[in-house]
Image 1 (tube, helix red, strand yellow):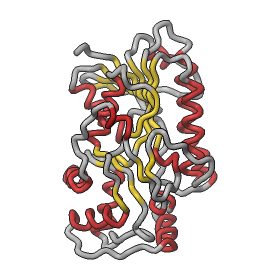
Image 2: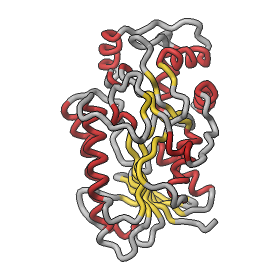
Image 3: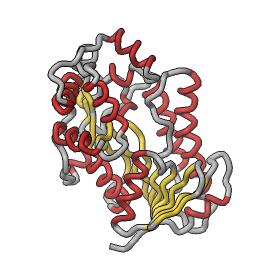
Length: 310
């Protein structure tokens, strides 16, 4: 396998750090575009960028083999107008900047892999969602509206790119610093790990191992073009997810949280209650059709690995 040079805008977060390490371990060279100070280590370096301007950072695209775009403010925040605006601008602006930079270099990368979210579907109830499912126009603004504008920006910015891959991902579980597992494990240990609302809402999730494997596959495989779901083929209901975390935390009981309690609690924790009250029963139809075999398809196994790494 020939070593590649991969550029990761927004690569300083949880997913970016794990992808960076995965690529470096296999011999690739990684350049992380970050708003922070430049750093360097074996096999990778970070370059300061300001997506509002086309500065010197655009030179890192010249001759690169792929861009994996992960920029975006964490969604685990209160749904205030200020936060909603930042959630959108932190995604749309960087995507537009990379699209403008693509036209400014002599040898642009042939591949652009773009992260999105299955939250694009809002609250989908019992509907089984695959890549052919048409997303709703309306829904929780922190989910549907933000993702709609994010994906529209990518579609416009990437028109000139030879191969593009859009990945709508479920909740990633595993590895050091996994924010979802930290929050769920804390609730379980605090005796608050009961079902949320009815507990019937579906949770689409993916192990970190499979998440990273699909990102690498998207870089490597010319077969991967267009939209894919990055999620386990076995989504889980909220009540079963919470029961799993209670077992892993060694708690036999967890207080359930009615909708009104969830709304109050989410606000106190600085989060959005819609993240817990809505659900999506998504499946990775295209990956399965193409023969991808999930390394960790079972939720309990994925959660146990995630807890062990926390």
